[in-house]
Image (cartoon, rainbow, N blue to C red):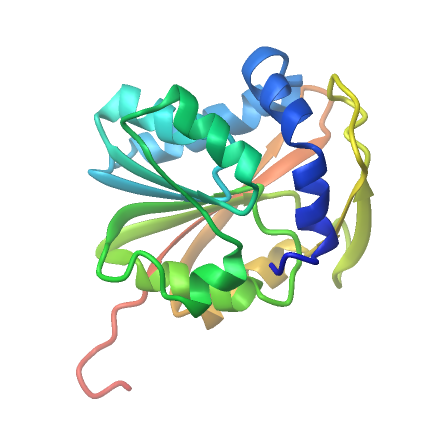
Length: 224
């Protein structure tokens, strides 16, 4: 995402209420999605984790606490990265837009057992390039975990998130939601083999997220 991307700009405006909400008063749906993500990571605890769109760094801290993993977080919002660094001297956090991350080939030479995009892709035209770059950061047996809210019907749709169930004063966030099949297709085009996604629902049956797990494809000699 570029510096002029309206979604990224909304995250910059929402940094303070986001930090407060995640640390003090997350909505009930967040407990469901965070628990599912941590359980998936725990299937094969990583030595090294990359959180793309790390926000204020909660996942890097949580995975290190549970598994002793070395974590790296990347986010395009300076205030979020500053908050992550302030409470986690052991973690490594980089402030970078996704577009710059790919263009500069940041973290060159580094490989990770788990790469996470947790509600961190928002229908940008750069999502495909980012997924290809993230796939290149995976170790041979590594996993990419992508959690998002899929569009309820075929075709990407424009949504404006008003954070109605979150405490605080928020700036609306525009983004484009893709259906589950489109996300799986993006992963396959990034040379990732995708496991069937898990749909998470609230007690009332409302869909709160879809969690995809993907691995780098293994190519047979001579298969191209």
